[in-house]
Image 1 (cartoon, rainbow, N blue to C red):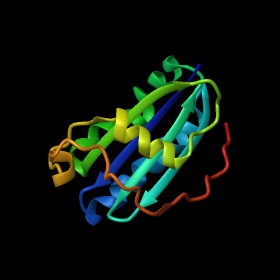
Image 2: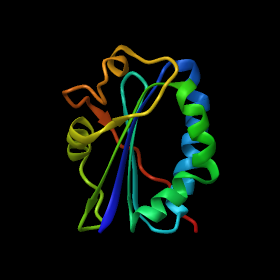
Image 3: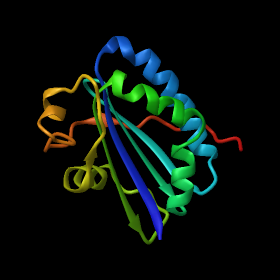
Length: 146
């Protein structure tokens, strides 16, 4: 069984975006090189919203990535830099990345909120994402050098 992890983050101000992007690039490179990863993808939406999705060979590989290196450092900044933070995780039979539509549906249905110090009205209302999926784009991924 493969493990899927989805995150949805909203950077609380344009002024925090350079700091966020620095850490996002570092964590993306770490994820691409991590043992047990089968897929990594990012999506950007208006109003400083960033989604990530990853597929892992097992939960232990995902937790090892989550608790180490660049990702561990970025997690310490999350509560200050983001006004919305949510995640969802589930198991599936294949190593394929789910569609963004499935990621949105799952985060609405099964998502959990992460603590932020400056919650938006959406986060304060206990919602993990807007009901309707917002238009966005998935940038090309840089090549992986392990």
